[in-house]
Image 1 (cartoon, helix red, strand yellow):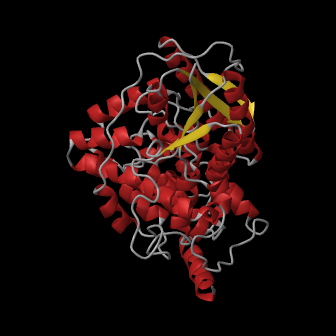
Image 2 (cartoon, one colour; image 1 turned 180 degrees about the vertical axis):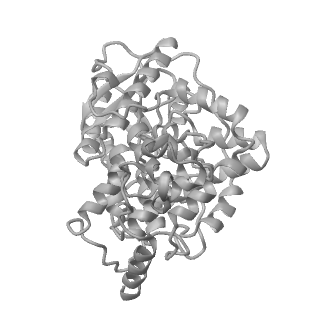
Image 3 (cartoon, rainbow, N blue to C red; image 1 turned 120 degrees about the vertical axis):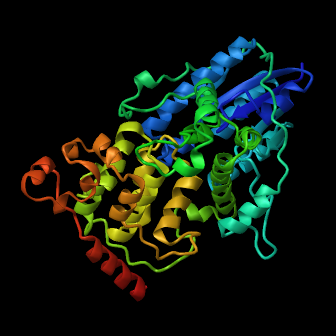
Length: 458
């Protein structure tokens, strides 16, 4: 019997899944396989929130396969070893998997190809499973990747997208292939109490609601902190429970300024992945070296802890950091503000902030997280590397009534309106509403002057 193995990685869905479709179009049975990658855990990327969301995704994927007559096989260990072991047990002829952008994923793919070929088996790697446009599909004339988003987006927008594939009606799995027990979030400690539910069903339900009631107003409202008008689909894109190709097709069919703005965000995600694919070292090193003399973690220890814990004295920063800890997620505008505050106002190495985000973010994607942090810190692809976001001015613009702050900083719930953004200015009876909320860890003028001095020396 002809057998194919489908290795699921960051594509935990049945709808629009090219590797699964290619395997099912073959003449025989299919082994749907997920390997809990020991290398990911050893590298420190196995954060509690992502493990919990992953457990939801695997259980949902298994349930969807069982509805179609199949099941998910789960193993743990080195991906290459486990895939080869399962392929041997099933006497498989070939393995299908999605392409990925990180250096680790590409080295893993190369090792797997060599190991399978040595055993007389084939590896098929499919593009546009985790991206709408594959890294390297569009390049400038003078380089292997785009370093600026706008020209990338122009070419990205002109690329024809493949058709969306339907979920299979049936999946036949050969008998006798053993599987570990599916993980459960209930067994995991340290999960954010407000963490969203994972899995393809939850993702498609959220997508349907977003297309119905959120997309049309996205262009005008996506920076509204209190309105929470973003799609919140990023965790589902990170784990691949939703297809970026399908998202772009469906948004474009809906049309309008909201759809255009949303598709642009999908393109930003692809942009960072093509940067990382071309420069894998940017996951930990400056994409553009600026010789920054960041404050050491020892010198800035108290400021870093205040930032992490949401007690900097700047309410919009503290609200965002508390949202991150409670939900394992943060509003996109808030990510920009908190990153700018750490890297430029406190002048702390962006890697400190990126590491903290990866410890908590359910959508902690290596390309988007590391390269967005570098964009804000001025070592990445921003064409204005010295820009500094003023948290007070930004709060007045994107949370003018202070509702976002009062939602996450209950100490300030008694401070009315926009006054909540500058509690240090309150006097008399109004000051009583501030309670034990801390004073700012640094003045904005002082932080800006330090940043400018440091950059002029660099």
